[in-house]
Length: 453
View 1 (tube, rainbow, N blue to C red):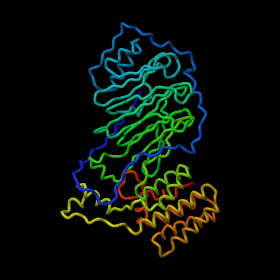
View 2: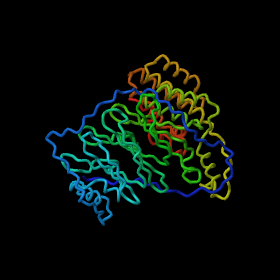
View 3: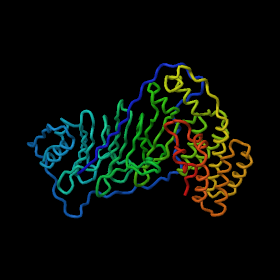
View 4: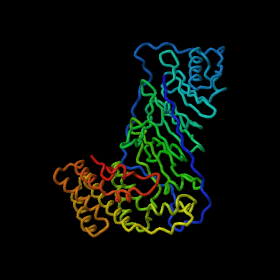
């Protein structure tokens, strides 16, 4: 089987220098409280066992006289071919443990053992060999195949109670193990499939993928978070250590928790949960993530935080430069004259508060609570008149509201808002937050201000 080689590479940047304490607010990444909502519990679906359309051939019987010999060629495809020939000649799979890390399991209920093989000394490749119609064949496993420094098979068990076990695995790789991957494999009745589902941004859209990757991975574990008897696959990370220059390059970062929940067909990604916001723009973006995921009560909680919480910090490009300078990076460190402490942008809070109120209006429209939507719209007009720094958001809200009243079409109303805000890059810059590695990229993707169809 032809496979692609997938390699995750992260280039380490320069380390941090010793610096004085920052007199401005810093972010403390606290572990978020995990509480799953608005995700229905699905009745597990029974997956059939291996049932070929024709009478299957007998799988090779084990012949103890057959010996496995590791090929001299180190290329992993040569090794995979040698394993295939060995198993089909009747070789005992236990012999492979002399050269590889192996797991022997019955993964498709056909009474014939399936063999998971991890091979390699620097890079590890995870491969599955299963007897199909009388012959052992390499199966589709990992990311064609997954390559890393460390592969750890975390569990082989029928957690989703559909009659066949899942194979949960994690990987760590790149320099200093600063990137990782997750995967889940299961027999679907005809073949082995990857059943972990996530989304990745590629250019101007999100695409569905059947694996997960993360920078700076930390803990990964299986735990039943919502009490339905089926554990979720949980993964935390995305925060670079303070000793490394990337910590400040992408500052502020928050601990991210990715959760994959069984939905009856796959283990699908729930919205990413971040540690509590330290800055106002982070609260706004958390609200946007949850509203896009149709978790409207959570979204409203973050929007109200962004509007009312006086303890949230302010953020700007100047503040990012100043903090980097305090740690020996950027023009504030290299100009010879330290940059003076920055002051808040007077536009930031009005823009963020007005935008959060606009998104509250959208939530009410999405939930067909039009009376509250109109009250919220009127509140925007009253709170952010023409002489208020938040007025551009009021104009954006008006462009949405007028179109929605005329067409009753939320996609067309959103298009009007997007057309308006595209002309106000200063507003999009404030919404995005400078340089944070976890921000929503409003400047390049202004449709994020109103992404509903």
